[in-house]
Image 1 (cartoon, one colour):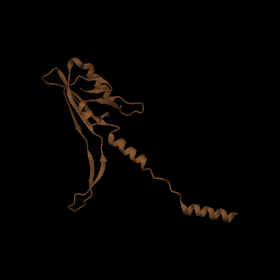
Image 2 (cartoon, one colour):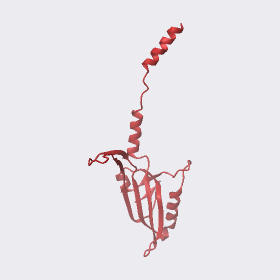
Image 3 (cartoon, rainbow, N blue to C red):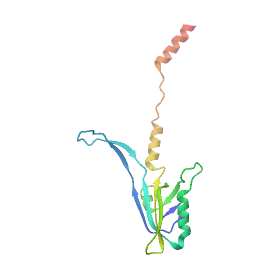
Image 4 (cartoon, helix red, strand yellow):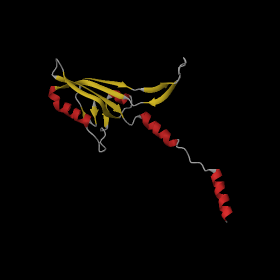
Length: 157
């Protein structure tokens, strides 16, 4: 099953491929140590492929239209995903990214459809935002400045 914002698509031979990059940078320099600098969990992506029958041309048109829809800010529209693999990895919302393609199947009366969705508002992203909010630097009182101001007040009186 595959649906975006509650609209179900009848995609035969549906294959959804999950991947996620864990970015890191080599910090070992010229040594043989395996020192890596972690650079966070990057958003997951879902590569979706399958067949849409010629008789379901409206579904193909709807899917292509959704892939290019924009929100009020001019950004790609965010969609809620319903799919077993997306659910297994807690991917709830995503945007179309990269290439959307539809080619006629050489033997079946259907189109080969392929597109990529990239996760938005991921669990990792939300967790990082909460941590940043909790660890905002607190403004400390400058004791020397306060003392200098008090001395200046005493001197002017």
